[in-house]
Image (cartoon, rainbow, N blue to C red; front, side):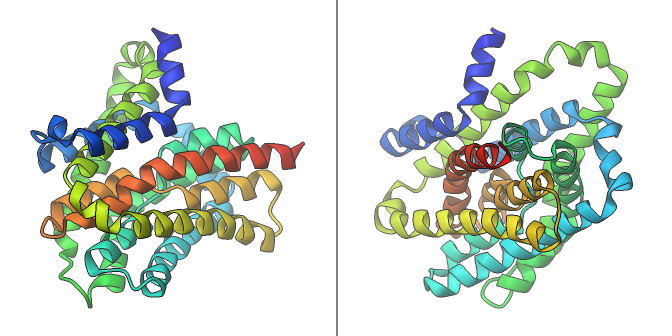
Length: 308
């Protein structure tokens, strides 16, 4: 069973891609899944993340605070600004632009830690950045979304704050508490969490795609192009920031991956919950979930070769 779990976790990009294809070809399979279920599913992924955390994971925040601050500043400036620039450059329809902006304003994704490990980056910095950016997300994600998109659509900052707290922070805290007080129990299931998260993310993507088949036929290509550029620029500029500051290669790699890989599942959930009248708003997050795992694997291979 552990071998199967490892195979699924190591092929997250292809599993999520298969989910997107099935959702597109057989949308009726996912018609019964409601928006509220997407929030619950993402909450379960965050609960799983909490089960894997230790206090030592945040040690880097106190031992190398500059690295974490630089990484998080890059995270919450590069990706939101790139989302804004690409939306204007490609003259995206409002609902698509909202989806791209939501992706850009979200914290780092949990898969980034796995990619950073494969890329031989600074894993402690990667985990620390993911944790801190996630904790900052209830404040910064709604605020940045409002600042960038507030002139185009109504952005309920308070409601988004509550949603992120319920979907992200609360499940992580509960997961962390469960691990702390029931450590023996969690040791037996931690090995299966990456597989569990992969399947849930694939299901979320499939559900979003299934609900937007007709829209994808008309706007899919431009969304794919923008999502790919958004992610690639994030990876490159994250690395560039580390280079300017003359950080070691392992730290440059970690920052690059953290900046480029977003919690796109959260973007999907927020779009489906707070911009339900704009179905296309959830699509950039769904595509990002597929693409950033593929690009992350490619980047990891490049970074490993650079390190050698």
